[in-house]
Length: 334
Ligand code: ASP
Image (cartoon, rainbow, N blue to C red; front, side, top):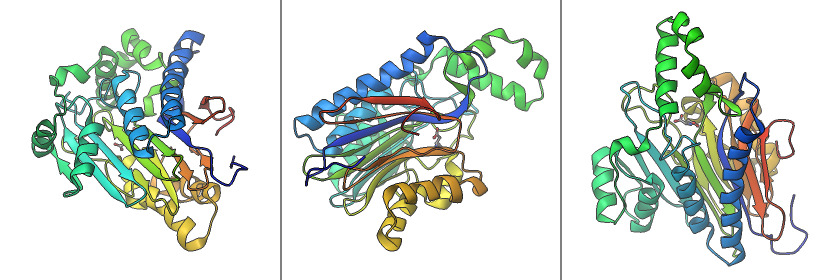
């Protein structure tokens, strides 16, 4: 997928989470909603790159748009904690100087990725959590919303379904038509899906950037933070190697330092991007319980989107070329 010209063609890649296939037959309309959302956001990123935008601006804006879309588990549409609240995490990283910003456990920031970006721009602390992160973001002009704003009936139903299943309440589960409907109204089974969103990009100046945003895992313990806002685990960018954004069982991605491991395999072992990413997703993560996937672009413009689940919402777009969107493993771009 590399460019034949001396300077790589700018490219953006997105993910909207990985998981198992839905058990129900999904209608063409339901699939189209996911594909359309990814396609629209990719086209916007492609247009920004064509106009010469920075990779950091492109990934920040793409993730902001994914946070606004209730189909994905980030921002509006985020999953619920065990206490039926939302705790959101996000991270951005710039490959040219390894600048980064991250927030975790925020509850009222409409777009956590913009708070992460503001922190990157400030250039001091790299990560803020909870109320301190919210106070900082408000001072920087980030918009706040009522915590209810993030919730959707489908996500609340997911929480209730999972809690019922954990309590062994299979009768309620089997006969709960609303739960089944909520869980199966998407191409990937919402009961077994990691819905984090992310973007990576290479810009016309040859710079890389990555961004990741999530509501975390349904029914997560209050205060739990996964890999998504952790630099080197769920998000990483370095112009010398690669930009990576991950989605999956966060604890395994943290223990494997999954995103940075790809960069390290490229820098220290000289592996090409595709082999480095394949090794981490297919060899390193599964023994740790690391179901999921990632998107990555290297400094030469190679793109890879590997996952070890049955599907991953994903897509990529090079400037001047068709936008590609895929969900299942047998589609091009796996
Ligand atoms: N990696 C995220 C987390 O563990 C979940 C996801 O990818 O959906 O918080």
